[in-house]
Length: 181
Image 1 (tube, rainbow, N blue to C red):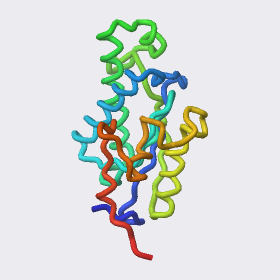
Image 2 (image 1 turned 120 degrees about the horizontal axis):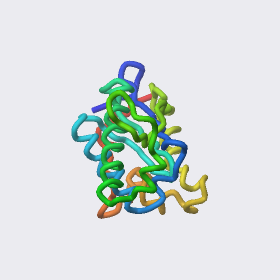
Image 3 (image 1 turned 180 degrees about the vertical axis):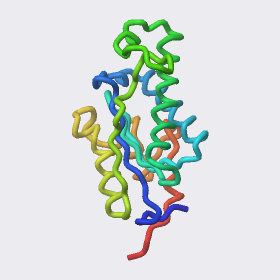
Image 4 (image 1 turned 90 degrees about the vertical axis):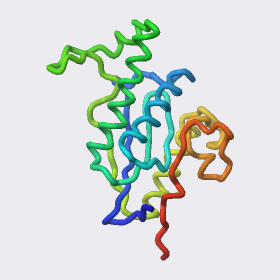
């Protein structure tokens, strides 16, 4: 169980695509990202509390068991691999070209994510709830839906107690222990 406090913080990450390219404008690319996030969770042991996938960015709330850089290494690293593999396997060369950069020392030449993701340390329940509401209202603010519960690639329904039978990504909200005031 996670109690959100100064000693056991949670993280709010915003991961922005390279050059703000709308990589996640199709259902298929959102599904590729979801599969990657699920793999990142299982391989890292992280807990996910809330998320939303937008056209050119991802917001996600995680536990604080790992350092922010380690958490992002799993989230961004695994998702970049899944996305690039999908583009290569499906010969989507024009999409790959948009992600091309100079060849790095490690041999990589593509960049899915901007290298400095925003991270915010959350040390209280109210702070956590403010970010969770921000995440869930993002598709409404961007005009993608009128009601946050109608956006499929978000944890809003789970938090409202109305999950789909085939919810795209499982959340670990039952692992949060709320502090009594």
